[in-house]
Image 1 (tube, rainbow, N blue to C red):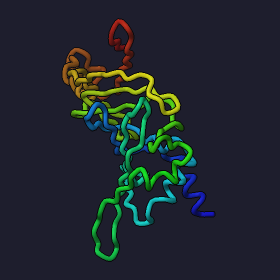
Image 2: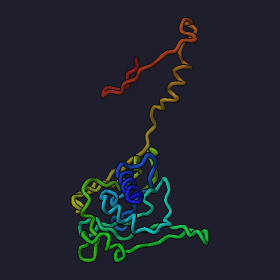
Image 3: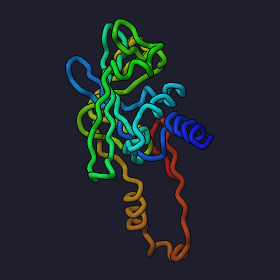
Image 4: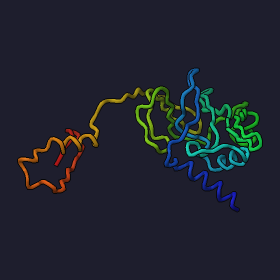
Length: 215
């Protein structure tokens, strides 16, 4: 019973995207490897439980990879296909870590319902997937809340890739609110308003279509 509860909790955590940055899967697009900012297997609770049972007990997990594995994907014949799964394991005897690689043939029993012509097609998944490469231009320490220099968004329905759009992101200098607060305090004409010395002043800021408003 404890193991079942643990598996359910693990799948639930994966679906809600943990409150820490997660390492993504890998997807090959047009011959190049991209970081897939998602874990498609985790979107199906049954597959999630099967993967948990399949992986060795000594698989290495971290706060950055709760699932304990990295899946490698490729778009083939218009479908998102699983190519292999890699998992780091730790040997208590040798005190060494190694990587185990599971190919399609080894994974087929887990994904039997989704096997077509020797491929594992992600027909359980529908939604958008983001793949990225290059430097990070924005990062939040929460799940896959980040942006990379170049991103491709795949629209998927029942495993079939319907559309792919490419975006180029960049970082532009803007207003740092912490620095702005210090600058306001520094530039405020305190000598002209001695009655405000020692008082607490609250600034309210609104961002609207026409610009930034203070009050």
